[in-house]
Picture 1 (cartoon, one colour):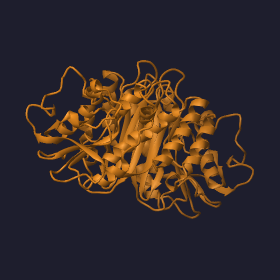
Picture 2 (cartoon, helix red, strand yellow; picture 1 turned 90 degrees about the horizontal axis):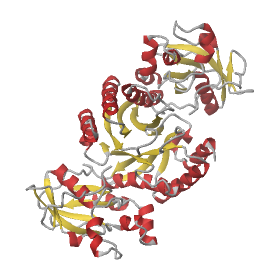
Picture 3 (cartoon, helix red, strand yellow; picture 1 turned 180 degrees about the horizontal axis):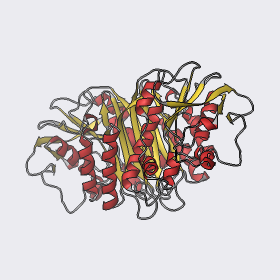
Picture 4 (cartoon, chains in turn yellow, orange; picture 1 turned 90 degrees about the vertical axis):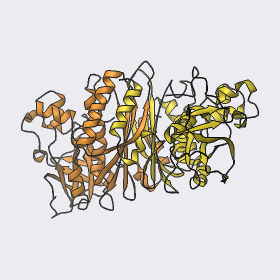
Length: 288
Length: 288
């Protein structure tokens, strides 16, 4: 059984309505929205990362999932593997910044010692309350809808590459689109966050909705510093934590967002970029 | 900053009512009860353990925390680090057993790859709904209350040591006291699960309640196979997942439980065993 087989096996177990077939960002029970992410040293963050930024990102990534459901963050539970005095001290500093900066409470969790060898890992569970029912899903996009994205795509890629202080900050300390998600939730037909790359996440939305999503790549908003020859890479890069959403034709988003495409009936492919099926030899995003 | 310092720092951040000062088994928000535990290979389970038992115990340990709050389990979110086809396959088998056996739904989670070296770890978040408000805590024990425990203490120790098939099953596949917790919640003054050792957990309850708990050690129920000279060790051994609770004088538990002591005003120590302060040279339980 490989990773895909494992996830298929989990899907067979996750038959409750709240699980949404494990095909959404969060579990949803009434107005309660819950998500859990793990981060592993050397896989999800660099071993030499500032622990304060690791703490920030652990919270931000989960709150971004809540934002995509239009949920107000309430509390987080932290699974923490101790890493030595200096590391732990910086982690707490970043945790404090994140809880204050993102207005969410630390509710609990678990602190464990790791064994002496090997990688460290962390888990975070975030719990929020949806402002609108039904809670948006990935699966509601319909032919004729318009496709939108908040903010800019590619800032995290530039930041990872050390491009500028502003983009490094965007990479290290992404800010979840909580306010935007709350305002958009009553209007969208589908919504998710762009954490693994615009193209990959758009394809996931198209698969969940049984439609084709057609992206107009010149319309994708990017930082002014983005070199023209890197725009294709930026659409396949993760960590931007923007919101990707579809709206019925004629409805404008009540927050700053850019129209980047349309939803069509499913034809030959779930995803088209400038009218063509994207190059399959290249990953559409970051799969982990 | 050492581990105690880290937890103190977290307590300073966890000021929300729901966090209960990080001194309880769970976070509580209205009737919603949430808990999160991590398990690390080589620390919380043996590297050669059957992965199916690891899955079972991950769920059972968290549902035991919910039981101590009188909460009906609703859903779990799993943080899973892939471990290769054979391991993952056995883990899924144990997960299936656990979800069915404990009547709880898989709501979601996250699957990650670890790096090639080093330990694997897992996280589990369990969400339940309390049947009684206020939700029981560790801090409500009052002088004059009686002290009770469900089931038997020490079966897990015998199982770890390979004592008998029955005790090995108790160690590998503990069953959370969900039914008992639901029935007890409206009556208890304090309740918690015994996961780290009877003496350690009783001392924690006494500390949280600002009282002294006096245990009558010959009254502590143990398996018939327990050698008399191991009774002291058994009271310091974890993994039993029984419920420890206090009741007002004159109230009997509505489920099978054994009276093992009384609650007194805080004197010289938070814990007395047969009238004496326990030997400080020996750990009271398993601290991790």
